[in-house]
Amino acid sequence: MTFKPGALSAALAAVLAMSSLTACGASSSPGADGVITVSYSEEVADELPLWIASEAGYFKEQGLNVKLVKLDSDQGYPALISGQTQIASIGGSQIVAGKAAGGDVKVLAALTPVVPYQLYANVATGAELKGKKIGYTSKSGSQYIGTLLALKKLGIKPSEVNLVPLGSVTNVNNALLSKTIDASATHPPASIKFEDAGMHMVLDLAKEKTPNIAVGISSTSDYIKAHPEVLDKFMAGLKKGFDRERADKAYSTKILGAHLGLKDQRALDETWEYYSTEVLADHPVATVAALQSSQQSLVGSVGGVEKVDLAGLIDTSFVDKAFPRK
Image (cartoon, rainbow, N blue to C red; front, top):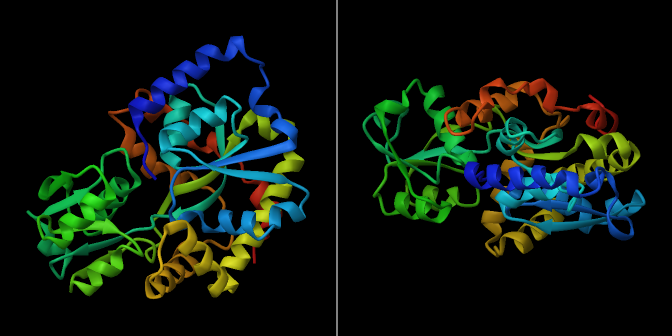
């Protein structure tokens, strides 16, 4: 999930400045004709439970008219606080940075409660990475957070490697395959190409259960206070999406293939296996620990972010009802 500090700050400032000119409860209304608009920013497997809940009719079973819309990552947060959407599937970095800029959004559930990345390299061990080139998209992306956490797990300081910003996931993947860089953080289905090229998985952060909210279900405090019953129903539908993802491989890979534009069944199977067993949580509650990596990565680029009270950004009540602990 990519976050653009400058773009979000500017958009958020504009929205906040307009608040006196719009209805105070803009984000607390259900939406036109009772439609609940839910945004997500990328076609990535992190969103699979949400897609399943929508396409399998689980939200409709709860009496909800949910409309999923894809918005660029720098548009999701402003759209939420301005009332254009009622719920957003966005990254923890956006929530933390938004609070520092004056927004009031809470994380209700974590679709991706761990860092969903594996560190692949053309060397066999972490120690061999010292002095090597490690590619990443940008400092505003979750991949960068994953890269820093992987280095920390391996006992390597960022100053001991050459971190190379390449702008996009495609650029990073191509650079590793062409060996113009030596390593990068990735996950299925892209990682399958690295396996086939004979590269080594040095570390699996998801298997290590490294906490992070790469993708979380969020809403404004106003909407939460005004429509708790809607959010209860939404979470109940989402729970069925979680359950279907785990239990029905054939259906899940069909939905994945449609959204990812992928026909390679091996790649779809491995992606489903990775997310359903290593990433998806039984009790997808947001935690302070999962937001800390986002906060730390934003220090120096977002003013006041180090002062944000992370516990105040979390509401676990809806997950606690819909996803009872086993």
